[in-house]
Length: 168
Image (cartoon, rainbow, N blue to C red):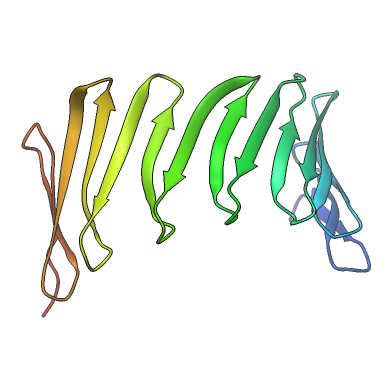
C-alpha cells in the first residue's frame, strides 16, 4: 500500500496459513494445525484483546466440537452415513436432522420447537417444504419445475411467490 501499512502472511511448509497481520488495523490472526492438517486453534488479537477458538475432530475428520472465546461450546453429531444429525450450542439443542434412504434431508427439528418437513418428487427435486409448530402448518412452500427440471416458481402461503424465467 502507498502508506506502507501492508498485510503480512506466513505459511508453514505444508502451505497452510499460520499467521496473518494487518498493519493497517493492527489485527493478527493465527492458526495452529493438528497432525492431520485440520485446524486445531484459531486466534485473533485485536484492540489488545486475545480471542481463541478451538476445534476438535473425530477420526473421520468431522468437526464435532468448537469452543468459543466465551467458553461456550458448539457440538455437532453425525449419522453412520456422515450426515449431520444434530447441532447444539451451550448444551442446548439448536437443530436435529433426519434423512431418507436416498440421503435426502426429510425432517429438520429446530431448537425453537419448529419442524421443517421436506417432500420430494420421484425425480429427487423438492416438491414442498412445510414448517410446522406442533400440529399446525406455519409455512408451506410448494416448488414447481419445468420439463428441464429448472425451478419455475416457489409458492408461499402469503401469495408472494418467487417466479423464475430462463432464456430459451
